[in-house]
Amino acid sequence: MMTLANRLASLIILLLLSCSSPEKNLVTINGNTMGTTYTVKFFPKTNNPEEIEENYILIERILKDINQQMSTYIPTSEISTFNQSESTDWFFISEDFYKVLERSFKYYDLSNGQYDITIMPLVNLWGFGPDIFESPPSETMIDSVKAFIGQNLIEVDKEKIRKKDSRVQIDLSSIAKGYAVDKIFNTLIEYEDLFIEIGGEIRTRSKSKDWKIGINTPSITNFENDIELVISLNNLSIATSGNYRNFYIIDDKFYHHEINPKTGYPISSNLGSVSVISNKSCLDADALSTMFFTSDNFEIIENLNGTESLSILLDEDKTFSKIFSSGFPKN
Image (cartoon, rainbow, N blue to C red):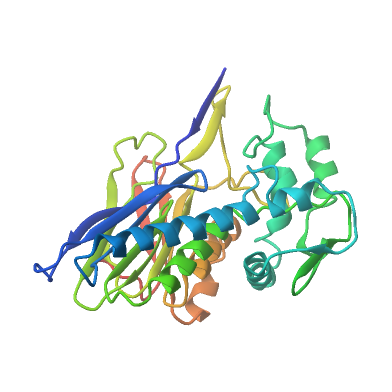
């Protein structure tokens, strides 16, 4: 008997906003994107409603463009067109698509291949993509798909990309939301107090505000969004990867969407979630949270300037313990 739980609630939720500018009203713009939700908060510079409307239009346009480029759930998107093609000729892509691809190679190299955007065929094989899913794959099926997994099988040259193996498919879901957060952030950079969140990936700007967020307890039964830790997040980005939002259970066995590209199997450990804070960009936090969850190599974090992490583990007694990097905020 299969139980499918694919809840799209944020891995990190906004817990509290403290306002030190009572003369102005905090504006919230929210909506749906990338299979989840987004929230943008700022203090308007004028009392003109057109300012808010113009920002809403800008935000929606950015998100629509990025979706049309990087969503595997849109059959006509750039990424879907590339994935569906069996050609090994050069495929021309948009500027945003190129920027995300280029950055993905940084984390592929840093993780020795544990972070890998060519994981799409394995994602589909395990039932976490747009394809119809019936049952967990056999070892033979996994081995056959692993033959065309690896970012060394794609080549990128500024405005174009090509496959070295016609069966290669890519998935940018581990990095695209962070990139979208950054693009909205840079578009609204004139606002001194700014909060942007897409599906739990967050970036803030703070001059007079103290943005506080809550990091969820990574439990598959956490339907109430219990909070494990509250932190201040000012002029920083944070992203979380976990095994408790997108999973299914078959014959009492738990399968989640974080897949090891080298073994071809979902990650098997007591690691419930990894949250990464970056002072550089939300894209970096987004990619790194996936990288650390799939590689479990946390020694790297201490050598990355401006980067901190929190790992939450499920112990044998069913309680949770936390492992902080040296500079991760604890309140």
